[in-house]
Image (cartoon, rainbow, N blue to C red; front, side):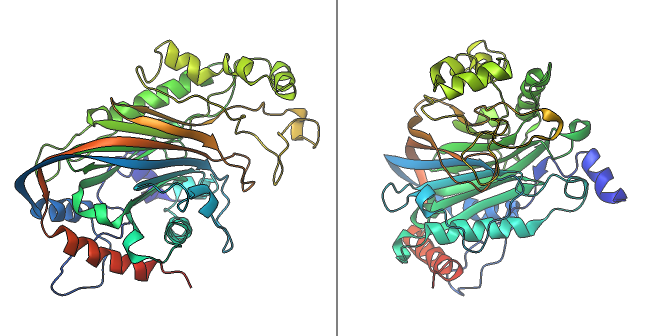
Length: 401
């Protein structure tokens, strides 16, 4: 039915290093003030590289990074959706915002095998941009540095406009681990960049689902595939990290789908009695990390929130709890499917919590990190001029009536 797109996806041509993504950051011509165009990755990297020079300046900067993951169950954001409370920019502002989504589109055959639905990416970025830039102050503007989608996996990265002159070598890469081991209903979308002299990589993932025998090993295999198969271009300077683990700091976020290794009846009984620590003792991801069977050496913050999956539609009731009819008589036991983990020395997590939006059968999860970033020997030319120019365009793109 879709012979060209199917053949392309099966041969991995669309799920490898990406040559383009959506961004608000063109190669800026401060002389002509041209209307921004969506650039390719090569244009972005080349632009940043050309504007770099050595001034022997060295100091340390502390930045706050907001990271969020949300399986939205194929539900598109409505015109009235606001995520201002979730981002909490007024009370707890950050410098970088990374938001990852899973099932941004329904995982039907037409979505998996057909052409990408870019409309949903535009809608989510509009919601995020308006929520981040609600203050209306041009000096506090955030811009979309990168936004990349593969089927239902979407990651979008926003940075404070004054940081843009210090961002270089942005790139995106996709890996499909779904049907036939290569299609994009499961897998990852990764975005990397350098901030000053430090490289960051954010990996938005959706791993294999299910709680049957062998599903946990399949999730481990998906994670290993993502680490081994993800590859980025070297960039104009030919020294940019190529693999995920080559970066200084890596944050992995997503619907990792790890479950609780207990009988369903036992899990539900412990939930009814609020025995969260007992449940966490049998959490699959914690066991796999602890035993080194997956993502060896990675860290996760303390979980002080209740399981994020699976809820009845528009409800605070877990699916299969007896308050609704279940087709086939089988429920899906609650679990902490939605997680944020990281690797790299010096990255500190200060918040790890969930939200209460009832948009889908998952609850969103967010974390806030602080990072000490050193600038040693290079910065961008005309930083103030470039930052002000980009901020003015962002204000026009995401101004709120």
